[in-house]
Length: 595
Image 1: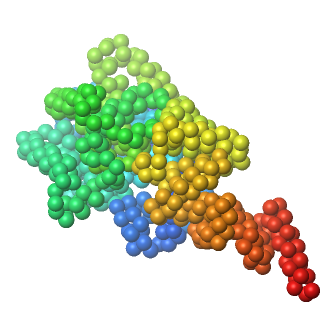
Image 2: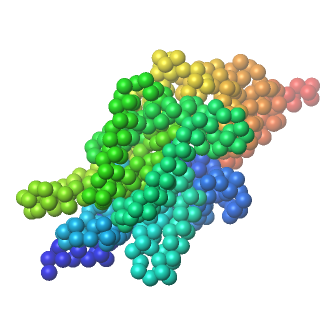
Image 3: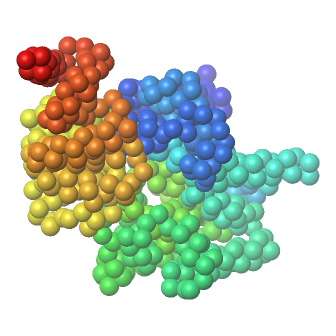
């Protein structure tokens, strides 16, 4: 018995897939929270309760993802390790489902006798390993908040596998059981993330590609017609005067910063960027600083759109002759349909959106390596395993290295700044990472770079469609370079724009600092008290509140504040000095009154 014999066994292949994922993600358990992790996990009050109504109010269309975060929170609080273990487990299960999907596809009537025994043995394993080890998947696995993308993909793939099993089942009872499972998985998917609404179309591609029949083909064209009509309606609804259309318009967009046509134009180029990153995963980054979509008048957009039409046309044309690669292409575009069409999302490009679609490209590439290449190039029958192994090892190394960057926020953001020097968010987050690490001199240097970038671009509050964390970091950058008026200008503009407690607390802190500089002590006191309402553990706000009270002659209240600080932060030097000064002034006042 040789290694090939053992590697062909399904149980061994599943164990290998799990070990492969653990091998490239096992060192990510200490990756800290990033950006939206603070909002979705650390400062999210609904995770502290099992009240279903609160979950629905917080995120009605992503309630399943919220439930898993709540489970993590109740098991191990805010320790990131437990959340990472859960994310890695999701990725292992999704990888196994890709393996199961390919195994099921190889049993369909359309492929009967068309795939060699070699392809039957190795195609599922290679496709699943490509999906598991690709560096492009790291953002959906290592970035904790994007569990929403990987968990939605898990339910989506489970629903596709169950539907396929139903189609392959000879007995009616068994067939309806699997249809029921597919429906249940679809419900879970729909309540995890909105991009899963394309699931019925994926089921239909299965029917068309692998269970050919005239009635199914007719149904396919009917469904495609509905999709086209739906997209046309979405594109037109912003200009139609009807309450329900306006409501539908609100539900099918994340931002009004740009219209549907411009967003679609941007996605024509972004989709090719995603494809390039899959086949050449160099230059991965968190933020691509693409905030302004190109219009349809740009020639590159037209060329990109024609390219997509050509690829889809070829896939549809070959769906009968080469159903497996055609299905991979159609699945890829179907899985991208929500986030890369006419539903505007604030960030034009994000790597985690490729997690589910990459299953389709993994199937396509695996077919090319295991089936097409040996059939078309006879010598490849001997060396294709070596080529495949080299590709997989290269992907595994890239994923491991990418995860190493995630472990160090400073290195992570520094690399992003090098790749996207004109991006606001990478610079702001790099400065914040330096500040959190206590490297204040470097934090101030990066803050100065950010301010210079903002000045070059002529940035003003409200000019960009930014998140609360980005605005907070811009305001803090002004504060770090000793420009309190500019920091307060940003804080004042956005004070009521966000509901995040962290954002409001920091904005009030910055407004208090400006008032303190200009000796408007009652106003400073008011803002610092508001800061402590939102951020009760903010030491700077406690210290500044004590100073604002002392400056107004409220020495007893100031003394109590400094005593509270020393109880919570024993030995705090600034509080100790201010307390001594306040007590001295109180003694002086008492002496004066006695005379």
